[in-house]
Image (cartoon, rainbow, N blue to C red; front, side, top):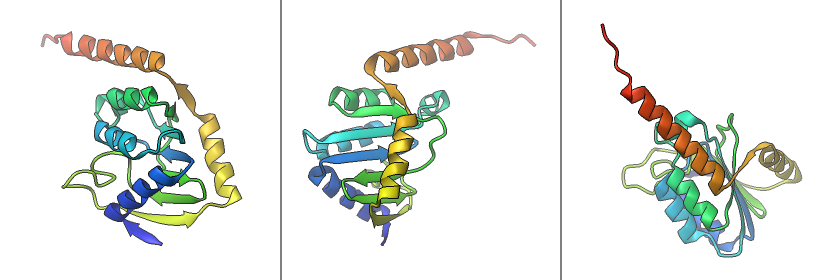
Length: 167
């Protein structure tokens, strides 16, 4: 079943509330998406979030340290996968494959959002194995690692901005 971005948002919200387990794979993850995820995720549910997490993603604003901190504090397990480009959202026995990142524009959380499409499907054993393998290959992220990364990138940008070139 082909669905547009607004339908995808509503269907994922329903699954976030109803499912026992979910794995969310998205290259990018923003603050507005973190608030939305926290608001709609049923407490006590087992939740995994896999994002790309490259330094450039944070420097460009595509990923947010604050957003990741908030979900980690709420018990959501986070991992980074440096080659991730897929956007797949898996809930118990249903999956959504989409062009939508977990951002305000990607998941239609903002009035002016991207035009996105996705597919809804019943999950099969091969799908579970593929997603579980992707998750296992990711690098676990906790608040300590996130803080180190943020400090490193802040120092890097401060140093690069303070250099003056004489012509």
